[in-house]
Image 1 (cartoon, rainbow, N blue to C red):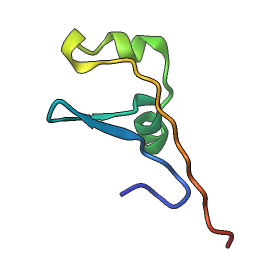
Image 2: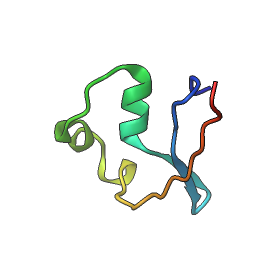
Image 3: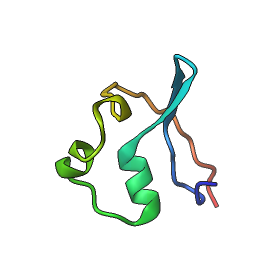
Image 4: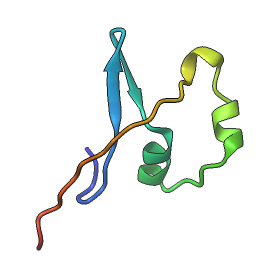
Length: 59
């Protein structure tokens, strides 16, 4: 699903998948601002720290 060298960070908690809004916006080619998160309902957003350890193979 994600194009090469693009990361879509996600977590699975409490039987729900949560995706990183910044990653989704980048994949869709959209600008992301604070208003984007405010448009979501309270039960649709959550703030967590995600660590990403990604190594891309050299072409």
